Length: 239
Image 1 (cartoon, rainbow, N blue to C red):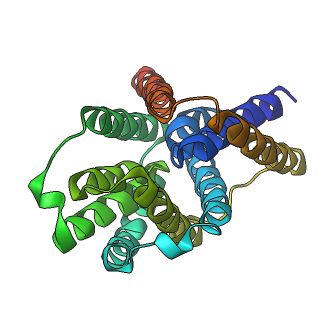
Image 2 (cartoon, rainbow, N blue to C red; image 1 turned 60 degrees about the vertical axis):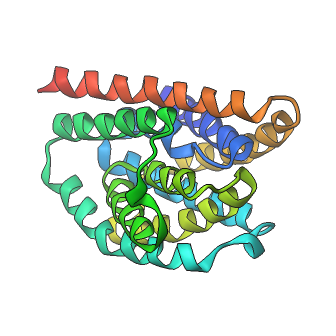
Image 3 (cartoon, helix red, strand yellow; image 1 turned 45 degrees about the vertical axis):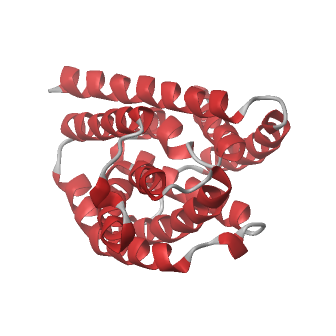
């Protein structure tokens, strides 16, 4: 029962920030999900939940998707998703925790710094961001930061970024689930996840009108950084 409560709380928090800012479910939830369920099931559950939220969110913004950028991003991600899944199956759990925590921590720090990289512009930049994002999504459940950096270097506004990030989330998470399979959860755990996702959607929408966007994004990144450092610490301890 205690595991279900922690699982529901993690998914609730991740869902809330996803609806609040348009990103962040995996960044916030993956470190905790990995600690609760193990690296494989934790990552795949994050893929399932983030993909489902992206599908719902995209329903109202699909007309603002930019095919010229999204096609190379998604094709590149599809090519690297199997490599990330292979890495997940090969490494022992402490090493996986260390790798996942490190990926989350580095990704958050790069996004917080707003790294400007000329190579992340145009079609080549889309391919590079998609390839790295696909690998990270299937290996660590966190594929959004490379796309965020691409959007930053392309000069996208938040209004432009959100629907395109949701489209990418639908595609890359679908590929990741197809390769990794679905998480092995009990009926009670699935019920807790579904209820928490619904509650998170309601909470996120209610908070969106009250919390400034910049402050909300900073909160997401701080929570993600704390989770990444925790996963690194547990991985090092296990080694």
